[in-house]
Length: 490
Image 1 (spheres, rainbow, N blue to C red):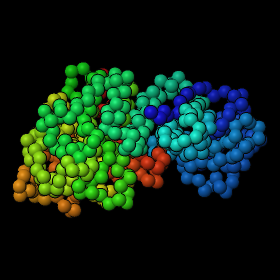
Image 2 (cartoon, rainbow, N blue to C red; image 1 turned 180 degrees about the vertical axis):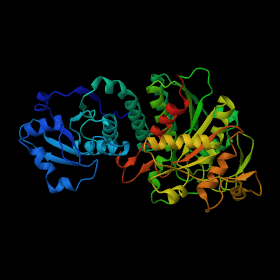
Image 3 (spheres, rainbow, N blue to C red; image 1 turned 60 degrees about the vertical axis):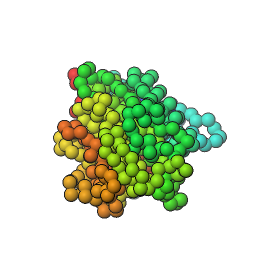
Image 4 (tube, rainbow, N blue to C red; image 1 turned 90 degrees about the vertical axis):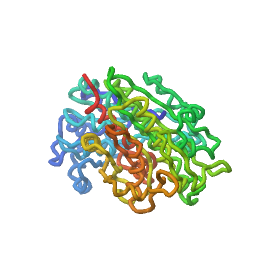
């Protein structure tokens, strides 16, 4: 797994600045009044900091943006980075500042003069998250650990004690990004399951259900998706039991390691992006890592359905009718609407076996959600206002975009089938909503449930403020925050 940069917190020692290597960074507020650390840096660099803050370039910066001074005199560091940031900064701006620092430092060590800045943890997390790079398949120099980040601050012991929870989030995000970025010839269903088994090192109980067990359970919808592939379908169950005897929160992920569309074949252009169609399962894996890494006092079970959707002589055909684990029959109109077939069986199994207090599924499910919400927000569908509000609050607190979408019985008519209990698609109108309506039929009465359609946020071609191009790790931090705020006891 790609490892985030090591972050350490230390007291500010003026004499150490001159010998710091790599990049030295300091905060300067809008009034350009320098704090103790910045004043010391200014003296060492013969007034370069003050001159920079009087420049035209500095005046154009927005909060959280940076100005780099290359090869400054008076110190060993190869660059000084000045960050325009107020002494009191909101979470979003602080994270943006950290991300800007990560971009400015590149692969060099970073010494950050934070002083008594109240957002030092957020800034460090932003820098750690933006420091990700997926290089597993690039030849040349061997991958090196990310250069360390040293935060010079007024309360090093306090911040050191608080950092592990943030580090757990960063590790979970990196795990998700690694999984989503992997090509499908590497991340087969078998390889995916093996990587999830590594969570046992953190105390997670991991169980892999193979095809014979899935057939015995009656997961015919899930198995129908993968029957055209040589890669065996699997369900992986991950249990974290830190909350005593309480019923767990269930997290369920769609894990289609590659999606050709099956017999309803996708267009060739852009099909290479379908390596990310296991983004829901990847997010569940990252969330389980973060939750276990910080030893959350909660019970959480993660279940992922791992399949590959391929065209083959044995593949499911449009017009086939299969029975779900619940017993309802589904007419498969479009084999490219396969994610809901995977989820419906895993959701039913999760409720049957674990009787969860709430259930959240995540899936790169529909292109329609991208048309509606773009790449800024995941679609949130729910049968329970309290659960939806709790998740939306957690997502907002972590600055992960999420927007609630409607459900309603009027959409069910679009799923009516002439030959079965339902169709797996409802046509182009309200495509993301009818997908959620399909899944809602597999939610038992009394089970609070959220469906998260993450097709627009799981992987972004141009990257985001906190992630380079490709996988974002969206949802890991929001789910971890939800568990911490709403499900931990003690």
